[in-house]
Amino acid sequence: MKKKSYDAIIVGTGVAGLYAALQLPKQVQVLIITKDEIENCDSYLAQGGICVQLSDEDFEPYFEDTMRAGRYENREESVRIMIESSRGIIQNLMDYGVDFDRNPDGTLSYTREGAHSAYRILHHQDVTGKAIMTTLIDQVKKCENIQIETFTTMVDLLMDEEGCHGIAARRQDGQMFLYYSKAVVLATGGLGGLFINSTNFPHITGDSFAIAKKHGILLENIPYIQIHPTVLYSKKKGRRFLISESVRGEGACLLNEKGERFVDELLPRDVVTDAIRSEMEKSGTDHVYIDMTKIPKEEILSHFPNIYERCMEEGYDVTKEKAPVVPAQHYLMGGIHTGTSGETSVPHLYAVGETACNGVHGANRLASNSLLESLVFASRADKRIVQDDLKKDICEIPVDEAFYASLQAEEEMEKLEKEYRILVLSEIRSQSPEFYDKWCKHRVKEELEP
Image 1 (cartoon, rainbow, N blue to C red):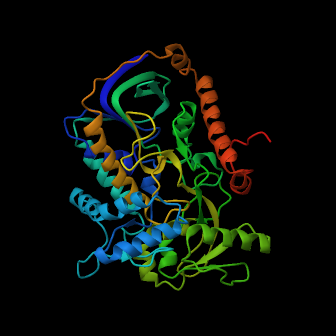
Image 2 (cartoon, one colour):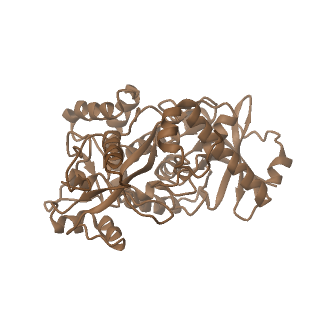
Image 3 (spheres, helix red, strand yellow):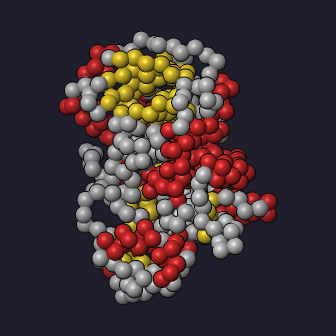
């Protein structure tokens, strides 16, 4: 087994992980690992946009929108920090080169999504996540202090009574590494890969939560899993294609089998999702329909080209006809418990992005808050790392090398991955049997014993 040392290790290459790497001082030696290609993360898939506080007067409405969507289970301090930091984050993204859509007069173009009281969402067509990710990836590749290892999976945290000192990781070819560091940042995304129908990449299976549970690291609200109301209905295997809430913000309607509208499309996601589920049960169908034909064709082609093209691939011309949609697993509001600087219950270990539960989202995420939240708290975690961790020495603690070496065998790695999946699902069921029975039973790839 090989051993290497870095100042900081970041696990995950979504916006939270990449931004955390970029915001650290340039003299800090950083390792980023990811299970797949750099681009294959859920941030890359984000369609709708990224929120920003429009003005000082918009603080209270934006705050209330976020709290209401989260059923007032949000941590108010975290929400305040996110909103107050938003304009600085957006300016920084534009300085990096992110090209948000603009109006003919050159001003920034804003859209609105479900549960928002104002048009405060910036976007790049319907591929905002891709636009931000592409820019951040380009910036990271310019940094000589940042090393990226793709197709590398974290299998464990290196821990003792003093805290976290690094990670054990396995490359795709079976080679095992012990990576030691002064600080570890978990930016591993959510747990959509556990589900049969999910908008997430299948390799995002919640490993961090299983590892955290194993080490007694505090988790919070793991069953707070958002089911997105509208993904394109398909019987094909693989990741489900999300049809952004932005289309409903611009006038698309949800219809039942009779062609009747049955819900206010701009209500919070959980309310719309429950309405769709109820409508499907009532009519005995496995989908409903989204009707975008009231949106001008030129707006669909300019604002939602990716959605238009993907629906056409499935045989639906959304400028002329409705398309079938169904709810699917989308986003985790819970995760590893953190404070407002990404700090976990263990020294030298941080969590950011969807992996973290800092309380911003409460019980249900407000649309287009996820990219902003990831960036804000990744930046804050960096400041905490500089303040508290970088001055300490790297500590190569003794570990069970025989166990880690055994994971070079494919069958042993598969066994561990299954154990982790079961551990996460068991945590969901133990915290919320109701949610598990409603949305996980017969809908996950690894069924639990009764």
